Length: 532
Image (spheres, rainbow, N blue to C red):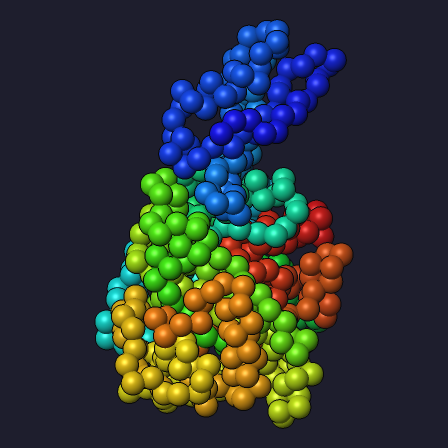
C-alpha cells in the first residue's frame, strides 16, 4: 500500500508546506517508521530540510475488500510549524462586565458563556439541574430504581443531554473555522487532540464530565457565575423588552437573556406561551432504537468475520424514502449502550451513548421517520403544541405498555415487521431491562408502517439488518425540538421581545453538540453587536 494523493501549497513563491495524503492498512496505521518512509518517498527531489510533519486529517475508507486509513499530513519544508494560539488566551476577566443571563448549561449555554469571556460580557448561567458529579446519582436512580428526577436526568443537568449521551462531535456545518474553534476549546479543557483530525470525532460519555467541569471552572475563574438547582419559573418583560428572569422568588436582572434550555424543557415552552410570547410548532423525527450485536455491524461494514486490530467499532448510516417521507438512522452508537432519557415520571424515552473506547458488544441507533405538521393535522394535532403533544402522547403510551418502571417496551426486529409480539427478547445493553410489547400497535399506524417498510428496504442494502437477532426498543422521540422559538436571522433576537435570544436545540436552531455550541457562540456575537 503506497501513496495515492499528493498536492502542495506555495507560499511566497517558495514551496514551504507540502500536503500529502497516504493510504495504509490497519496493521500499518501505528507504524511510524513505515509512514515516515512513505512520506519520504514523496519528498524525493524536494530541496530543503523537513522540520515538521503534522497529521491534519484521519479517516477510514471501508468500501474495498479491506478497510484502509486515509492520513493527510502537512510537511513543513525549511520552516517550523507554529502552533495556533490557545483560544482561551483571548478570555477577559469579566467580574464587572455587563451580565448576560444564560438559561441552561448544555453545549449551547456553556459555549455561549465562553464566548462571553472573549467579548467582555459576564455570563450568569442558570441551570435547573445539578452539577455533573451530583447528577450521576440521579442517573443511577433512573437506571436501577426507575426513579425520574424531573430536574436532573440524562437530559437535564450540567452539560445537558450530550454529557451522558455519547459525545459525538460530527456536524454537517461547512463553517470549518467555527467548528475548529469549538473543537480546540474542547481540547483546551481536556479532550484528546485526536478530535482535531478525526473525520468523525468522538469523546465518550466517560470523559465528557471532566471536560464539562473544566469548562465551568474556566467560566468561574474569569468572573462568570454558574448557579445549579435554579429552574427559571418566570421571565420579566417590560414594554416588550426583557429585563430578567425569576427562579422561584429569586430575581436575576439583565437586558439580555439567552434561552439555551434544550429540546426537552417543555415547561419553558409553556411559560413562553402563557406569557403570549410567540412559539411555533415544527416538524421532527420519531421512531424506535434498534440494537444489533457490534460483531454483525463490523462484518457488514468491514467485510471481515473478525474486526482487525486498530479498526474502531464500525458505524453505519442508513436512509430510505417511504411514501415521500424519510426513514433513517439517527445518533448511531457503535460499541454503545441504550439509556433511559425520560424527563418526567410516567413516560418512556430511550437514547444511545458510547464510552470513549466503544467496546460494548452492542451497536445501537435511532431508527426514525420524519413527522410533518401537515401530516399531524390530519390526525387532529393542531396549534403550537401539535408536534409536542404527539411526542408526549406516544411516550406515555410506551410507559403504559410496561410495568410502571423504566423497563422499555421492545420486540425482536423481524417480529416487529411481521406484527407479532415477541415470545422472547435478545440480551440488551439497556440496564433497566426490556419488556415484550406490541410496538406495532402502540405506535400510530402511519408511523409503524413507514418504519416497517423502511426496515424492509434497508435490509436489501444491508443484508441481515432485519433480523430477530436484534431488538427494536421504544421510543426514540427526542431527536430534535418539536417547537421553534422564532428569532430574527439578522440579530438572533426574538421578533417580539427585545433582548430575548432563543438558542440551540431547544429553540430549534441546532442538532448536536457542535452545532449547538456554534449557535451559542453566534448568539453572543449578535448580542455584542446589538448592545455594543
